[in-house]
Image 1 (cartoon, each protein chain N blue to C red):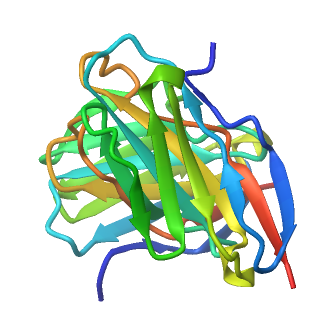
Image 2: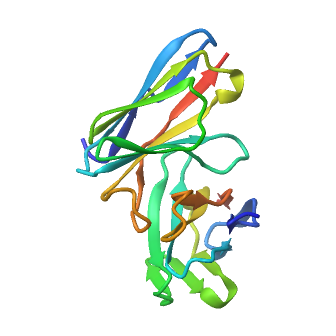
Length: 115
Length: 116
């Protein structure tokens, strides 16, 4: 398998549920990212990991908890979400350590609906 | 103020027409990078091009071409002889070398409909 994969592709959850989104990159990259894409809003960067260490957290609520066990895998753990958290969650990776010239390669996203 | 402005929210053209998607950016950095991504209905953002601020040469790749004009802070994208498969949302993005707070800043996107 090549590129960046994400599972599940679709997720419906209640506000009291706990779920996790998974991202895997097969490109040998060193940096991974989580983005949120809501309707009519620009892409919002949530978290950045470089060499498995978190380097960026853009004031994301604590109900979103990332985990990067190795450079190929990235998780986003979800708990007690709100309906406004419904969005497309995109994972990306880049070759180097999240530098300015890095080209990010994206997965297909997980479409999350919170009821 | 928006750092990346894609003023065209939605465009519809008939197949085989040429179409240009506008992107205007704002930065104080002298070193920066500009990107275009395509997001088809499947959701995945597909990388199209990266251009650094020191390279103003226009680029052509098949039916795609990009016009980088530092004087007007624009990085426009033209599709020649459009096809239905070009229908997607297109995002322009900026990454600044000195201001690393935002990593990469995306515009709001332009939704392109190619009508058969």
